[in-house]
Image 1 (cartoon, rainbow, N blue to C red):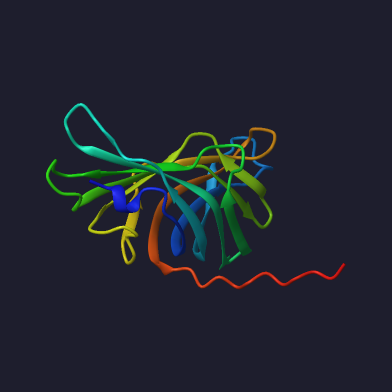
Image 2: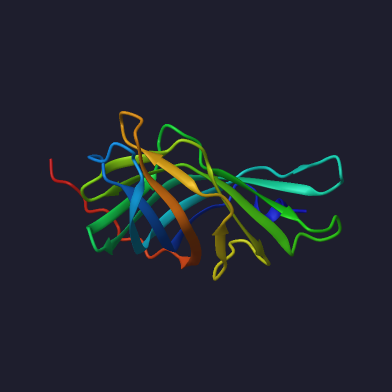
Length: 184
């Protein structure tokens, strides 16, 4: 059912709207006392695997994000987000019926490294689950909403931020800038 998409690798331009609640590390109660809103832009690289059939007869198309870079301005300065290289970033596409591939449900489990000025580099300890209904692959123009909130910790394991709102729009094909050749 998904043969034409298997082994596809594509770069996608994304826009992410986020709302973080952050904790001042000087507070003993670690309460999330400040809200930060930001719109981030960047790219993701998606690699699609081989489809398989589940017990209910529906095919599932697995995919992974092999690279992700985003940044955007906030009241605290530029927030940067990238794929956590130590954790998987994977997802699936599941058709709603057994007889055609679309519409389908796209779902992903996201692990990230987030740099917030004044808070350093933080990572989520459990996956942030996002999802959307799609009608094509690649699903350009689709906005996926988060289905779980995420807690972000610093290198010492201290809870420093909570993701309380997130949507990711898969804008379209990425306009990648070619790398310059280096002189030897």
